[in-house]
Length: 628
Image (cartoon, rainbow, N blue to C red; front, side, top):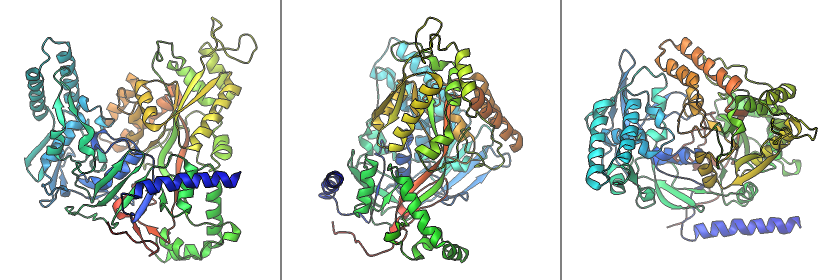
């Protein structure tokens, strides 16, 4: 039976890859990834989208993959004023879009303006709120659209007039200017220590304005600026990064090739890179073993802990030689590739890599007063959220469920990851305190049946647990959480797995009670995690809102003393993680990659995991590119 099941899986793999490659030449590098949602820089937020975008688009600067500052991107150089508020960027005069058009400062200005429009519904709008007048412009546009909608005139002329007023207001209010085609000047409200890090983030990448304009119209009914996503498709998308998009089929994969017009420091090494979404994690491993893919960018197979142990066993046997090579200046991958091959008889491997990541695995509590259908939401009460959090035995999860022994998390910002920042303590596992807090919120087992009820005798609503399918680890954690809450608190849970696209829509609409989440830091500052809980932040799917918390973040923005600023942010996280608990942190992420360093290079191991697909390349002759 096992042999039949494996054969069936192999047929699935073969069908998927033959279907893809029937019309596409074999790529030099092929890797598996979660399916991509969008290649619109201002609209993206998922890691798989951001990873690919970094090779298709290039910002003012590029984050060094080894985590040491930022390197030049489209900007060759930049200066910062003595007060830290004024940044001047000097763009490469020979920077070009993939169609040959010059990349200009106005391409950045217009893309950033688009990020600031509420029309765009971007998750990362607030990244630009540190720019002078940006927050006020966003509020002005939001109010103007509401007034337009409530008004009597909804026609093309009125909508175009509002848009012209918006363009004028942006120029008047926001501290972004373009003295000439190769100079961009940005004025900040206050100094931002991580400003260059933000400029390297993909959502601040430029956009080829003629392409976007051709797909954009002003809706006369609402006044909103609407863009047809067709401008991001293969054969249409004009990009400025080291690679270009040549093929993309939903749930089938995409293909990137070098952008011949690219001028910069990150010229593509790979002749082609194919990205193939494989929803079933175990099937992805079979695809790797068959040689169909070179890299699994997130190894989530149920037996991944066993695979990791096989690699650790091999490395331990050659530890002395490995450390000797590292000491002589070899990179990790060079040192691994030079060691004696694994012994199959000993169950050894060298292609599973457990990497520390700048991220936190968590579950979200819906903080809205009511649920869909108007039902009262018990998780609107912070006491209920704290009770559920303290009823989770995180050590048991990492030892018995994930089996990777990830560092457990009681805070959202990865502990010890940011220099100068002191993490709060957070809430520990305490089942007695958890039951007491649930009782304080009015939920008590009143009849001895093991189920908690409110004063009216109604049982606690069955907890709707939303998660994205495709990752066995997530489902296994969900099952374990449901059991802990049932046994520890006397509540029933119902798991609801959905495809990523549809789960994301439910999150945005608030159609969940508890939902799986997770976050990788976008830049090296606590706010990359804390901003998730700002009122109306684009990534605040929980709809959590606290004036005290928002005020602390604003105080930190205005504080010029670095030490005092970090203390304010530490208090903000203490309030979030010890009192309000809109997010239940479980553990700090480790990411498992699967690739053979003797065959493929170009992957960074820095915890930021800022991979550049353009730098991937083969180091053996086992496969060569087929002729188109």
